[in-house]
Length: 241
Ligand code: PXP
Image (cartoon, rainbow, N blue to C red):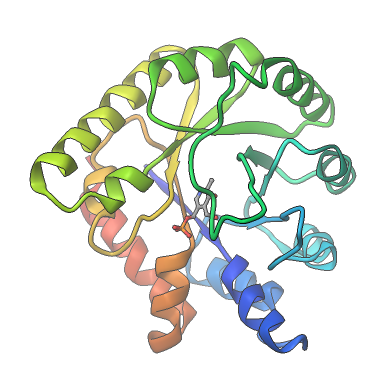
């Protein structure tokens, strides 16, 4: 069984374009859950370019499924997470200039920080997922720092155009999922997944959660969010191994 966690950040991006109150990401989370999403993902960035603190606090009150807070291992955001207590935090690298999260974490470089972060989150009952490239060394490091889960970065797979590159990237994801599973980690996948490339990811049996934002919110502009979420759920259900 693979669950679908819907990232609603881009609803906030549209809201912020006019600095007003609509569309409200809280309402988007509600609709996504009503359509069958089993989790809501939101990234409180250091620069607050989409989700604001107010959104996060309200999501904590209103999300009935699972709240996954994507965040950098940054002291200010860590303190907010410890106050809000989402179900899961997904730790990502964050650069101010990037359009979206660009790559996985370098865990070895941030080992001590991440160890402390895992300890603090676990003390509050919050699970920790680390967003990493499909790389055995990063998986071993994730186990060492005490993570519960890794989210495998699917961006390179999603951006591959040539068949040979797609096959190569898919193989890395398949091997990494097995390696992480054998190491006792739960496994999620995300970034760049859409209505054309998600089916193959569903066939990797160790992957239990998908985190998808851009493609679902983009489709929602034409179909409505409920239909966009249901369409993705249909792909997942059809392709489960
Ligand atoms: N997972 C992580 C860790 C991300 O940073 C993002 C982008 O916010 C996603 C999943 C969702 O990616 P996309 O918007 O391309 O579906």
